[in-house]
Amino acid sequence: MKKSVLVFVVCAWLMLVGGLHQVYAESAAKDGIESGQKAVAKSSNKGPKCIGLVNMSNGMVLPKGKIVTNVKYRYVHKDSLYNGSTKKNGDYGGKYDRLNQSLQFTAKAGLFEDFEARVMVPYWDKQVKRKPGNLSKPWDTDNVSGLGDVVVMGRYALMTQRSGDWLNLAFGAGLKLPTGDADHKNGLPYSKTHEYIGPAGQLGTGSWDPKFELGATKFFGRSRVDAHMMYTVTGEGSHNSRMGNQFKYDLGYGYALNKYFDVELELNGVDQQRHWYDGSPDNASGGHTIYITPGVHWKISENSNLSVGVPLVVFRDLNGYSGSPEKNSRYGLGEDYQIVTRLGFTF
Image (tube, rainbow, N blue to C red; front, side, top):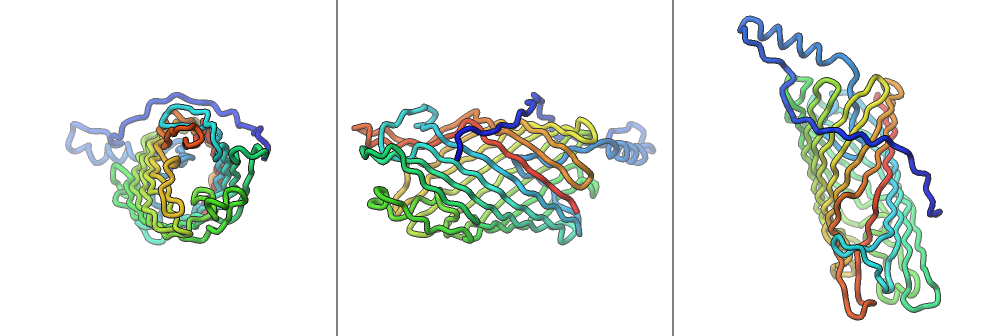
């Protein structure tokens, strides 16, 4: 894979995240409250609306009979070693460069008035470069690509603005299925220590992982505020390995500039626990990373849209440890940014 990447130039808009507040205006006259609320609600529905943010989920549930599909591309290149937030050189044999690219196909359908189902199907292209100790060969490159682990989820609306509530609030649960190949083996010399590559390098984990989510969305005028969090509980995977539990949390603001374009700003956090590898913890995996994601949406038509976002790392605390001699050290791999694009369709 070429090191140079064509990076989209995205306008980074600095916006204050608006607080959640009532859409309906208060009226002092008792007889005018109902008519005043209807007038304000009708007025608030006019004008362009901001579509869903690109790097996070939300608290929306589709109406019965509505279908939404999208394909999302994500580019992540980790080529820097860290112990906590300190960048390290890492003069030892081990992983030094990881490139993950994914295409995720998502379909959502409103099955009942307050319930939707969705399925997410990922396709992975993973590459890892490692330095094999003191051997004459400077780099070892390992590639794997194919179908990943499919996720199925259901989401129930606790509150919806379309029903007159002041907020959209939804709870969801689902399961990650072991559909991806988890049997990719290491080549020499790494196979002498571990026959299989670690769980983060496989297409799938070989485990059944429950997921739980809670999301909220508030529309007011041309603006929207979204908050979302998801927790993944991992099970025992293939070859005595296990991915660490993961907690993701997000807060975002979007604004519709006009009929065709939106801008957005997100705060995205990922708290990833350590992975387990051949029955032992990988102490140079996992950690806590926070991103700021500016983005732009192009609303091509009423039923199609294209979004681009660039998550920028603003905080990291990656797991790693120093050893003596230096070859006994192990550090975590981190990136400075990601690229996320999404093409969506509504039916």
